[in-house]
Each structure stands twice: as structure tokens, then as C-alpha cells.
Length: 164
Image (tube, rainbow, N blue to C red; front, side, top):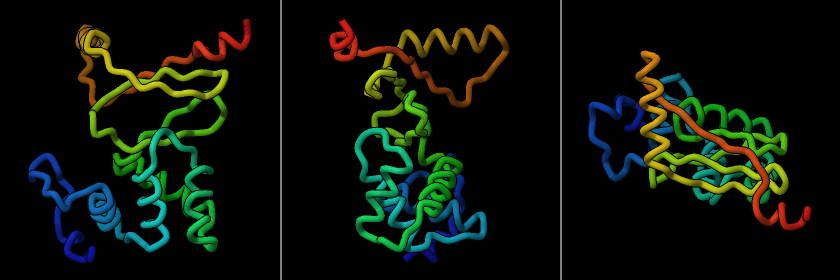
């Protein structure tokens, strides 16, 4: 029942998160602020995306959703992913294969990516020294970092082994 969420402010910095304030509920509140609603079709896309493991393309999400609802079109998936990104509930990246890939915000927090341009493998990593260096560089130039991502492109060990 989402009508109660429409009355709640979206400002998560001032109000503590409640157990029922999951990503789907936050998305419904985001849509309500824009005068939209979480339709059954959008709900299917959001649920499929949030249940996903890894970094999926819009096409992969569409094929997964279409399996349970053949009437749902690809435009609904693309528009919903765009809205999820605007709501801060999806992060996009390029895996070097020409397709945008999406992932939900990680429960483990910020991380960066190593992306193989040979096979598309994506490895997530965290490094406190890199994060501290990025912060020092930003401060040196008078910047306050509000968000960032780092994607390193190269060839993974398995692809290098096949090439040699």
C-alpha cells in the first residue's frame, strides 16, 4: 500500500530510515514527488533489478521481466532505469561492450570496478588509499566531492591467457 508513502518527505538525511523504507518504497516516494506512481509494470522492473546479482544491461533486465510479463515493452524498462538512476537507486556504467550496465547501490558501500574489455568481466574492489588520494586531489583543487566512480579498463588474466 503506497498511498501512505506519498505523504512522507523524501529527505532521508533528516529522517532516520525505517525497516520498511526499502529501495522500492523510496522509489515510490521519489515518483510521488514528481507526480507519478509506481505502476505494476514499473514495480516488476524495479523488483527484477533489485533482485539481480551483478551488473545487468537494460536488455538483460527486459528479457527477465518479459519472461513473467510478455506485455511489458523495452521502453518501460529503459524509462524505469532512467528514473531509478535519477532517484539514486541505480548506478550505470559501461563495460566496454557498448551496453550500459546497471547495479543497485551496494549494501557494502562504495566500490570501484575493474572491467575486462575482452570478455566484459567486472570485478568490484575497494581501496582506502585510492579513496584518500582522490579526496586529497579534490581538496587541493578546491573541490568538495559529492559522488564519484572509478572504472579501470583492461584485459583480465583469463583473456590474456587465451591470447598468448
